[in-house]
Image (tube, rainbow, N blue to C red; front, side, top):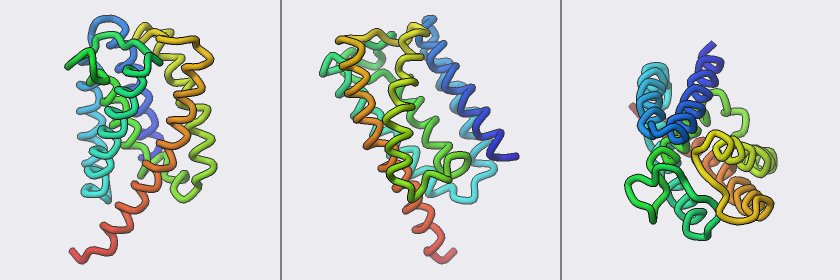
Length: 176
């Protein structure tokens, strides 16, 4: 039941973030993420590992989406805090994804090729949805942008999934 709730929260934050950014409410995803995180941490068996994972995902998202912005892959709606950095609402989406990696997406841990394939396909599909919802625009030819995004996500998903697994193992080996 927790895995189903985890997926539903994830989808709600994901859609709310894109809808909010596309309609001038970039704060909407953050509000929803706070509710998701409160629920998640109330039920988490690995709170410290999940906190580290949130930070790692936020940093990964900030770096990758800033790179996308600087390379002209995408132009984001509501580029806060700066037009030179990935907007906070997309970093929220990365943190949202992180909250699935030790629960509903735990099955990806240790399956690096599968998680890379999921990133290669799922990453670009998510960005297509973001463009369709008005949260971003393509900064280059769509096919080129999708290739760049797919490669980045094919690397990011196994790295974050592996990090999640290592943090849980580390937490389990530390005496309470």
